Image (cartoon, rainbow, N blue to C red; front, side, top):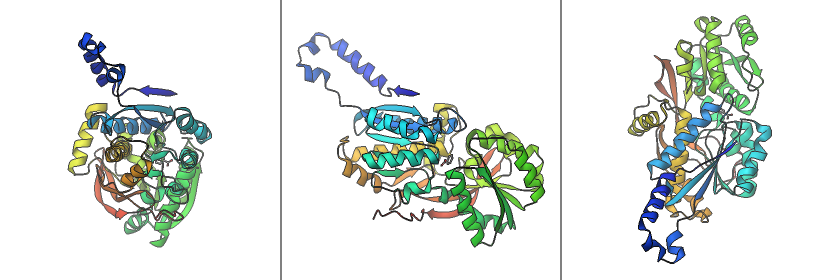
Length: 401
Ligand code: BEZ
């Protein structure tokens, strides 16, 4: 699926109306004066709009466009054309979809994706082509480690960042033996791996790692196995539609009463309305919570709700900050997309007033951010602590200075 969204349509229509109204006067002007409009900036968006991650793709897209619309709908004074491609969260289609945007559409900027496997293919091509790319969700560690490059930025997180701080928190609660359960692909492996690293350092033991093919949501047999293993707790990464199903099945199986459920915060972000009572009490770590009490978040979450009729979540925040980063860099070069070195320098040095809290970038161009400890209370992710302050990904294997 490829869709064009002329966000500046209203401006163009009113400009056209003004031109039509000016009638005879306009026709006396030489053609270049009549037609001169700054060229559009093309922003390519590779996100899932179908499948288990569809809601994530929609929130990232809507919030990114909202940020740019709030600033007048232009980037560095130039109108914007968004070119959307449905990634279907399918790594097998990622190279083709990326080429459609970079070589076919010749986008000035590339944004997305959600799925770590899609990100690996997308970033590989973007590095080779030199397209300035902002990863607006996928946490694949390699993107800002061994695959890092001057033209690759991330406004979201590394998979390591979101889960490493959880181990000590679970040990503080006396949960010494855990079973992990996740999807069998890069994000699942890396999140569980990061959790295990922090947990082992704090003295915890992962008894069993259960891996389920992505995007499978048949959990019953695995829940039966967890019951027989009798761990102190369960740690998980699921997101989108799969997260809702997992929380509901975990609750319905009766396990939630005896074995507390922990996870990367994607489990309970954007999913709580659908999960209902099944979400209550779950403890997670993440770089955002809708309940965060800061002015940027209050303003953002109200505006997002007003625009979309949906509650804000971490995915919307990442989209919004992608819009903010584009605005910041394009303002610095006054809309000159050819000034790539200056655009990248502006992005590297950006200090964004993000709804998640102040946002800066590490040398590997990944966010440096607080990781919040959250617990679901009355249908909200309540912030119950800060699991890690200003956490940077180690950026191992990235040579950017
Ligand atoms: C990932 O594949 O990197 C991912 C997908 C959904 C939520 C978080 C991470």
